[in-house]
Amino acid sequence: MFADIENNKFIKKPSTVSIISFPFNGGQSHPGVELGPKELIGLGLVDQLKEMGYGIAETSGVVDTESLKPTVVAKGLNTNNTEWVSAACKELSSRVEAECRKGFLPVTLGGDHSLAIGTLNGSLKVFGDKLRVLWVDAHADINPLNETASGNLHGCPLALVCGIDKSPFFDWIKEHLGFDKLVYIGLRDVDLPEQKVIKKHNIKAFTMYHIDKYGISKVFDMAMDYINPNRDLPVHMSFDVDSMDPSVIPATGTPVRGGMTFREGHFLCEAMAETGCLVAMDLAEVNPLLGDKEAQFKTIDIGCSLVRSALGETLL
Ligand SMILES: [Mn+2]
Image 1 (cartoon, rainbow, N blue to C red):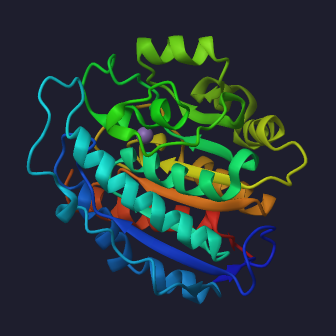
Image 2 (image 1 turned 120 degrees about the horizontal axis):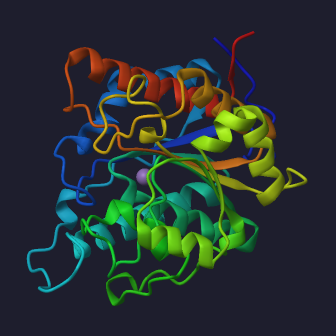
């Protein structure tokens, strides 16, 4: 296995990855997504990263999301499991923050994409105004909390991270991401309230239309030119596996046809590694209980290879 793990501009040498398992399903309605981290590691992700030459931090471990489940929940909220998502993400934030401060590269394995409320808060605390975010997803995940139709918080993380919503249930979020520091790649299913938010705040978004029109290489360059023109700023990549076409990654809770091909997804991750600017990564929405055995294996296997590509695995 070949890898370039020395070109990262922000990670302390020798390069160390902190695998943070976040077995959490409270941000959506399909059981099984909490098993994602265990299955990804079970298929050998940690061993593969070691083989690439990374040190693996011993301290990051597993967030005990079950123990953070509240016994009493507020009634009348528009969102589901609000207190649980908040408590679990607050804990996740402090894990990511701690690993970044050590100069390690945290890779958070989900779990549903509400996890980004925590991971982005953690990296924002360390990198502040310099932090840039690449959000790879079929969905925009920026529904205001009072406007989400499903009530599922995995469709809302960016509303909280960007400060559109200042919910009292998330009052631990003090740092917010500027709209000009965020870029989307892969969108193809955007809710009406999200369309309004994206237009109002002029958020840069490359949809599948742009990938078809320009190709993934140009789209990646344009996305980086927008958030990180000199390739000298730290980037947190939040990768939802539903950005990929369901024929490639079938075992995920909210698949949408017309997604990225196997190579488009891997190219994007390889290009991210090549910038040397990746400081944190999320891999969200792997659900090992959905679909048949083949669908489940494909999803977990390709989930691992996307992480390896983002961390510098090369073909030669
Ligand atoms: Mn998502």
